[in-house]
Image (tube, rainbow, N blue to C red):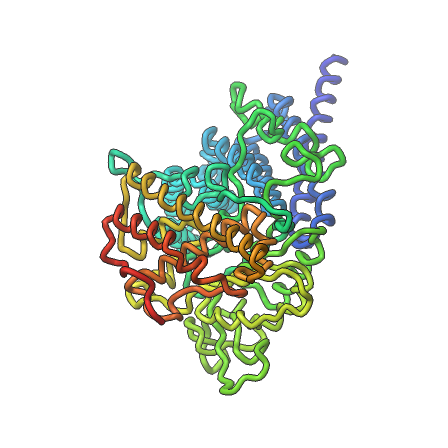
Length: 601
């Protein structure tokens, strides 16, 4: 009898311990979004460490005492799924904080286990609409992670499942938010359609996703442009601010298409090596095949003293970045200031903005910093009476406009600016008051009428060139699909172009030193040693050369600009680059889209 009471007491203590860990985990998790600033590096790491630590204990605890928790606590499968979903969210948010793509894989493993083990399969039978909402949110989060990992086949499967779940939720509960979930579904479908600008086809004519062949995926050893190093290439990209404020552009989960493409362009492919601590999980095992407890990093939780990112202390593969969707001007400037503050010695700050133009009515501007207009940030389409705008940017409230002059203080440190807008050229006048390296890449301000509707919704053409040069060229030549073997052949021409352009940039610098002639601004040379910035510069050159030769892009406003200007004869109009573009056009059978030489302005 005593032994029986002792066992019951032990079981009761186990249940109490589980309840304590569960409540503590919820408090810490909720605090991540409620209590922590979204900017700065150091404030949040300790908090994340404590949260990971509690979830480690909670996950191990429910695995070790599953039978007791099943019988005495009434632990249900959806509750296990909710814990796994929270851990997946933790990894995803840690990816957003650190920019390290390996954490996306960790988030994926937990989300995939939830689906594989059908943790939410009986959610509809619980007669709890809030539980069904949790299931729908899980699907939406899983889809985001799969999109970022380019698992498009799985994305389509998840969208089909989500559609069925939304229908079941609507039929069962007739909820007030059913229209919101229908909108989410349409948003996802529209995003997937817009993302597939050009289809690369397998031998069986089914579309495939390329991840390592320069198709616009993340940077890898195979896609990193070559470079002849010099002592002047001193800077590395450390901080990035990606801002998406275009009104009508396809979006999902506060990621516009332009943001989605640019964030991948500025990341390296996740590594999958046995020496990487993030890959030291033992997989899914046991009769329940739950994610192993070792999926919480065994080498130390993020934020703890023993923690090493990617196996190396104080070292990361990707620059740190912030993603801002339609921020207020105050939010934008605060995040810029935070990135500026966090820059180490020898680091560079990149600002990428995709936004509609804010146009000035000043006829004789004297202050180029504020009288030429700028970019709309958080403005949504509104009535003219309310001081709003048409989405093409006829007028904006001044308070919601980022002016070139707003960026002057941040040029005290090395800065690389990319402006994708129909008012991009107003940023070419930013002065270098402080003598620091400064490069500004500006999109064309217009596109041919045939592309305007698609570009407005499906994402900017300029950003597409920076993300996937071959896809962009196919798009402006109306090539909708390309067989994989042909794509790879065409990609070799793009690789040749990038290699040749890199050689010409280096050659310009050597000629400048040997002959005393300033062919290329020193800012480009200082940025050129960084893999990401070099990639952007060379893809910009590709974009400029292609649009200069394309018959449909007439006039200077349909071509990109940069400041400082890149040399024309020695680079942008060099015969060797034009020749490669003509060869590529012939390989795609679109030679008729291109003129014999550069169009005159």
